[in-house]
Length: 103
Image (cartoon, rainbow, N blue to C red; front, side):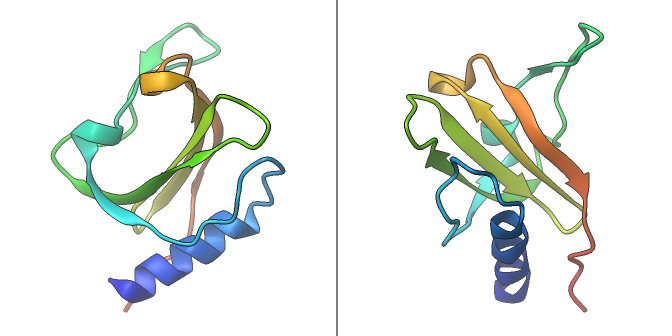
């Protein structure tokens, strides 16, 4: 688990998101806690994570803003989103497949 956390921390920090503080820790979070709804450009509302699965993630303050960054990942995908209090007005910043599988 620590190997996956280390790879994910490096991957999140490697994204170079300007107003996001460096990621130094990730915590195990239940999908139902982090699975907020996003409105896609088509108008469709979608959730991306399994409510019953455990993911690694964290919430970081957006520098110079009252919004937050939510980061979440598993061994196949990582996501950075930005939102207001309680996950309102959520926007996807990055959602991508990544090669972070551990042996």
